[in-house]
Image (tube, rainbow, N blue to C red):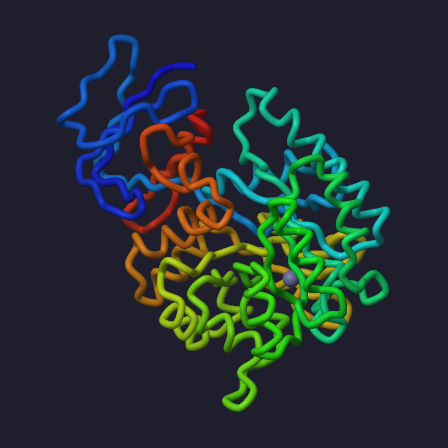
Length: 388
Ligand SMILES: [Zn+2]
């Protein structure tokens, strides 16, 4: 691989802003980073000058089901690489492949496929987003707040079923979404934490007290806040009340302008602060594709005007890409650096990989996105490889 010195007008790490920055990329990592002035160009390196651009870390999507006409539940090399290539064009340089509730055997088969893909994903010269692991969305979720997850496949939390998933994932199980009010949830949360997973509350009808009990057991994240949750009321603040008032819990937000309205988005941003909000796509196979009929796991969804619904008319994930998520949040008045951290440093920190991903720093993977003045993406590097 060639050595590249990227010279940009400014870089957002995203914790700090560096004007006139130099980023030296070698062997897929950031070897040196700082003011361009203080750096010298190594003899074999080529310099790329982009003084009218802002460099930011590549986006890390912890909740995505599919894109480019494919769903990660297909579990094949072809399907997952199609997802990876499509999202990379929109600045997502790594993601956590997210399952949708299915039967245990179907889930195990899909997860084995994803794990196999992960094991050999770097044996290609193709530039595509890196799959960091698997997020299990279901089956341990509430029948009352299931959204579009098929009711016949929902299960009470079970350490035994979880163990089957862990085996199939072969070390790649990263996130478990669970409804903490279900019978058996707390021991299942304990088992997932012991296996090194991040545990999230989601698709839940939990009361405030039930949510706080889950947090006491190590739940540190909440999935697509507001959506598929017991609604907030001033005398029954519920899981949303617990999320908004617990700084140890990070909150996912789908900022497509359809899932959550502007005021509710602002409320979440103000209550949680820029360090504790994580923007996700919840993207389905239709992302990056024209309106029409698509599959989410095993069921059909219809996309019209970019909005994805199931046969009952319920919202079924989104067709949001993270570059659009960024622009939507900035349009709410959030400073660019704060918006960027919600797509980069915050999800990396939740996964405990902030020294490798989600930040521009020496030693981190060279996952880099360049933005123009209108916050459109002009260039993407994944682990040092430039996207054409
Ligand atoms: Zn969901």
